[in-house]
Image (cartoon, rainbow, N blue to C red; front, side):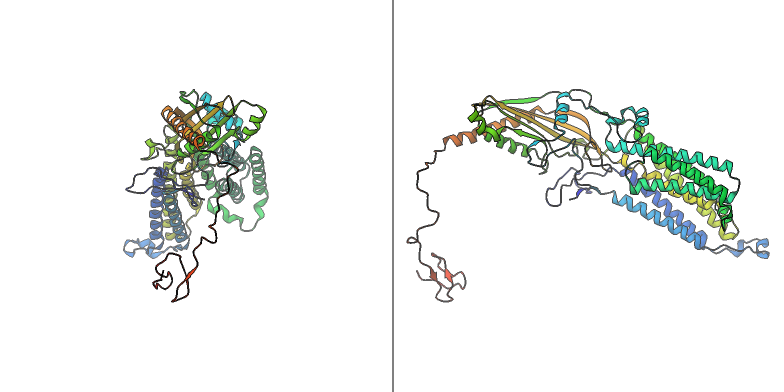
Length: 576
């Protein structure tokens, strides 16, 4: 089952759900507009740089502009094949960014998004979910206890971001991952500095730097495509110790490896330094964006607006009308999320025989979260310091991409003029281009922030006897505004309540509806005459002697209906 979220040009961008075998889907403008714009700009920049590299690598020199010295002592021009490959790589990266931006113009929701505020029951199940008591307490007090921060690095994260425990679990995991990358990058930078001081041989130093660069790239790739959780502190420490040990051993004992001298020509120490500097800058900005002004949880009691009414109906009819009224709250046909449905109706007969004198029912449901009316024309992006840090990341990604592309152009120009030109800047150019793409995509989770609104329906009913003359029904409707992240996890805790407001008018209307229909059903049931158990059973089939004889069509022999004037098979007129 797949939920779809898209924006249709020229159409009112209000949420519209479709419930069926394909699952619910709702439409509104995508929240990735800013990220898509920067992805498109980077794609255009990469395509332009690729075309320039193609032109520099494949263009023939003009003899009219060649100097006499070059004509008398011509230099050996380099081959164009490596630069054509580089230009092709830039084109592919640009196409990939365009594909990402195009895919995010229509956002596909995962099944179950947005997740429930707490654990829920299966639809139409009876009982109470484990989180029903917590949600009832939140509705009564209007305050959400942030609880304890869990996961790795919780001590350091708590000191750096005191309000992080109240944030959605997606943001907590995001900051844990950023912090792990920062610590790993700092450790690799220290290992690189130590290796640079102790190892003087350029080839072996280049080999050690290649190891550090591969480990940094592997960590980022592992977090981006393999695992969605931050590595544990123990794993980070073990990886750093192994990296420093193996790097120093390679620097001391790898000098005898064949062809190792060619590594010094690739500029790997400089490229590794650039890689670690970019990693620290990008992860630092991403961490600042994640910790800046997290969403504040509820801290006050909402206004109480509870409608009550005395209903002259039996419990069974009352609960039937309650369920019908809850059905009217469904959002575009999507069933409510049930958290509690507890009633003593099933034990009514046993209670009556035992002389019991109580009927109690408790119901707690939440409607499907929808986009609020004030956000249907567009989802606002992050604000304040978080938006500033995210925009700095996007600008940094463009600048790194431009710097890497310019280095590729200069390298291609120098190499096609002279085969002996150094390739020192090639590795650094590749690092800058890749780091530019990572800077633009690292804040993807924070761009996916969406606010939704739902209704929390809480009602209770009690009476002094199992078959009372009056049942006291208590009904409350609370509008809940919450926030979740589309690109985050779909688990309990991935939504945070932002605001609660009571809707007394809706609660009063529901009580009146239930009262009117339940009392009408009870009155109809009482007015209906009882059926005697000694009355003869009405025959379900007419006696054989009353049945009309079977008629056949004289033309085709097909059986004809008793009062038919024409044969339904051949159309021949029948005689009566």
